[in-house]
Amino acid sequence: MKKLITFSITMFIALAISSCKKYEDGPMLSLRSRTARLANAWKVETVLKNGTDVTSSYDNYEETYEKGGKYSFQYNYGSVSFSGSGKWEFQNKDEEIRRSDVDAQKDRILYILKLKEEHFWYYYYDGTDKYEVRLISK
Image: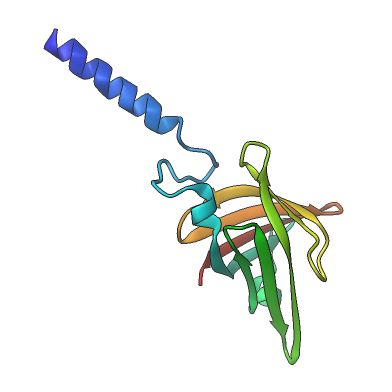
């Protein structure tokens, strides 16, 4: 009987933990909310366009998300700087982020692949082009 109870508790915990994983690339379980994990300053680690690495074009690109739904970006390309701000919000059961009213950027739906304290990965479409953006905590 004791073995059955131990087995049942173990299976319940394993099932509960496996159902916590929201995104394809984790995390399995987090004590921080999705908003708390997203609210950060991020810099580009990798950018793929249709599977081809185009990171060198985004070397100085940064994004900042605030808990209150504010979004901003900064991009330096040589001697030219671009920046803007707007709004963000989770949608589709927190599997997507909608960025809107951003200066110098189109409104976008970001499809979250990974959202951890140190890593934020997403992809989006610009016409028929698929961009996968991998950011790390700044």
